[in-house]
Length: 254
Image (cartoon, rainbow, N blue to C red; front, side, top):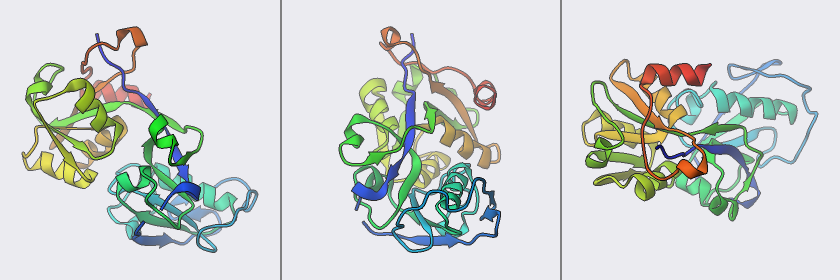
């Protein structure tokens, strides 16, 4: 039997959130913002922005594939960036202002002066008490990434050094359900994956969508060993990993 950990993600509206910011902004041409093509009617849905003339979006970097670039100033494309670009366009703006903040600050309502947060944020009942979510825009489960050649399965992971990102649903899942002998918590994704590359941990656990992007950027040094898959409630009694990276990638892309 396998245990499920698929969750829905939404963005957070700014109205309930408060902290310190690091800013970067990208200008737009008539039909693009950054490198993103924008669609719809410009200005069709207006609102008062946190900073006049631009959409201010908070996220947590690095996040390859979602926000392509390691600093706010270098982001010009990626799934969530282009999502934000299209929201900005339809709100009548030509700029997306990217703000890099700690992930735990976003989900704990400790950020201020922004319009929305886009950071692959899981929608949970606990988080709903302090932040205002949009409707979900994608679903994800939990992936396991290792250095190439490392063997891991649902039993061996319990004896390995497992790294997780602070305040994520993946961290809670590993602690509550998998219960490995050693868990190290990192404040951000950069520290988590750097520790894996340096051999300070054996396994990094994070959203499947995020670990796939990290493995792709590693030039063959990292691989996604498997994921915790969604199953009916009656089967949620023990933990298990399934799929190697090639099959995993095929399913996600198809």
